[in-house]
Length: 148
Image 1 (tube, rainbow, N blue to C red):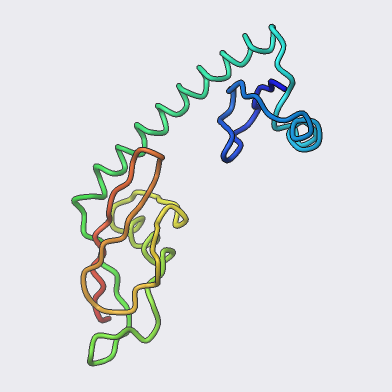
Image 2: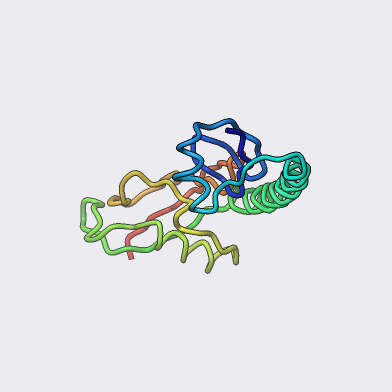
């Protein structure tokens, strides 16, 4: 069955795409949840408009993400934390702490969920924290953790 996606669906497509799926998947999952509608000739024209709107919105989001990246890549974010004599922190520096420090020091508000920190930072020193603000915009933030 050909359906037009009304929203992004993982491993299937993005909003406005016309995809061919199994009849049961369309009837029992996609359509009841409002994720898709059956493709007709008029709906396919409407889907083209949805794709154009998606592309314009995506281009604006990418430009905004690149602007943030240009501001944050050269900056060094300083975070203070209590540490022992060997450089081990008593707690840890998390993505929330880094997001707060970025806002205070650069005035740029970033979502902590866009930072991909495998483990919280537990040592004093310089650390690179990767950020992914857009599918095509990924960059590191330099975080300097110092003993406070």
